[in-house]
Length: 203
Image 1: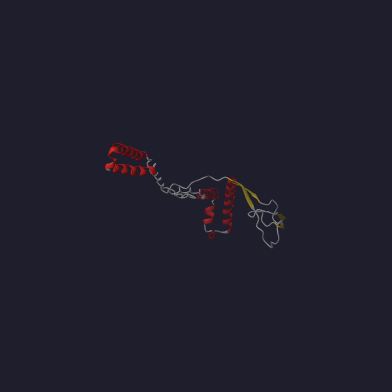
Image 2: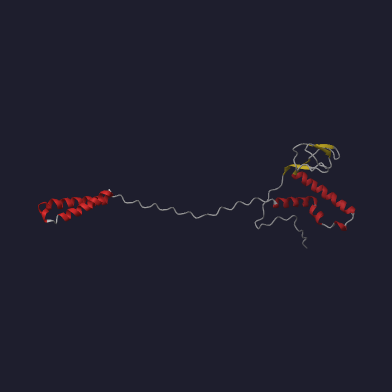
């Protein structure tokens, strides 16, 4: 529609100018009418033009939100301290290890070691299922298979070539197939539990 508006406007201007010429006096009514019609058409053309679409509002950029902090992995310190407390309660292990045994005779140390041994063994048997890695008696000739678990064997002496290896069993090793420890969390203030409480006799 826009290309037709310019000629129409020029034609209206030409007709209006022609109407002023004396020679066109007999046709002035027709010329004026034609100029009026063209003016109306030009006006309609202007009004009918589609308005340019308003630019779509740009979406507001969302503020960058910090990623939520990754949950802190559960730390095993309370469980470890709790297990140490059990060893202390049942076998007096912490008392035995933290005491200065140089002041005691071998007989006294041996007697205390028996108590510690019996109590701590009971705790291990209660909370772990412990078995030897090798069932053969120490000193026996054994074969280390190919693809052996590196955490279950320690090769000493002259190690050469590829498994399987053959050698003398120096230590049977130990492994556990079950662990049953209490599940604990840090205290609200982040403090670890006590291994053993201080005992105070009131008077």
